[in-house]
Length: 84
Image (tube, rainbow, N blue to C red):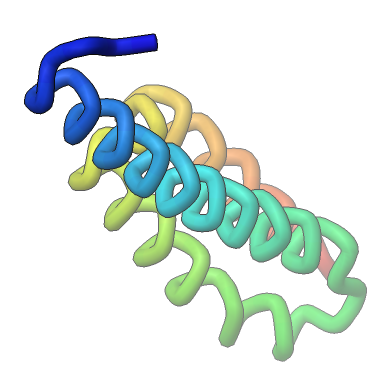
């Protein structure tokens, strides 16, 4: 257990940040999964910009790596374009 006051505060702050980051990450994964499972091209086309925006915000907050976001955006765009 930490003895210093600043170390105790750091532990509390890290717990809050970890919970917030896990929430953001899980929300993004769910959005990506929903878009991947979408069969209707019109609905998928409407969802794509929202998911891309969500991924860009996570990159800005350093929750996911920019290359991972770029790969996801590329694959999702290909998926949406391939829908009939």
